[in-house]
Length: 158
Image 1: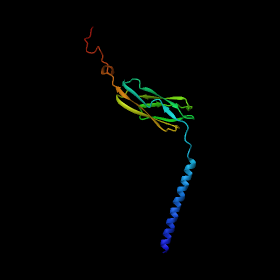
Image 2 (image 1 turned 180 degrees about the horizontal axis):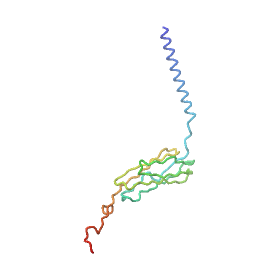
Image 3 (image 1 turned 135 degrees about the vertical axis):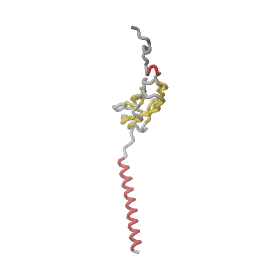
Image 4 (image 1 turned 90 degrees about the horizontal axis):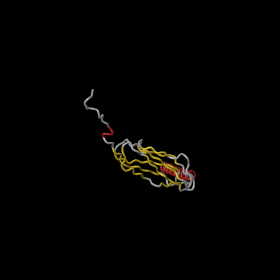
């Protein structure tokens, strides 16, 4: 009988301990929550289609955005999906109602179709935004990539 009482007492103590810990965790989380940001970001477009561009051609584009919120918008990080896609984001906060630009450069020395993304992290209440670039890089013609010496094979004149 003593064993049963002992087991019930231990079980009850463990159960009560878990309940108390859960209450403490719930209370502490609610006090550390930060208020939602009043900044927000709205892009004119989230996809840029280069179409077909020549190898080594201009792989630059811009994404314009507006801070549609009520406090300054701070872009904390812009990251391309690979090393061939390099974004440039504003370093300064963008005030409410003002516009900003994210410039993206793609390495057009890589031949073939591409679809790449840029992830934009900020304090906007809408959260993380993903921008996309796509297109096809067309290889240079063989003659342009490997020019021939026009005098090669011609008879020499003395």
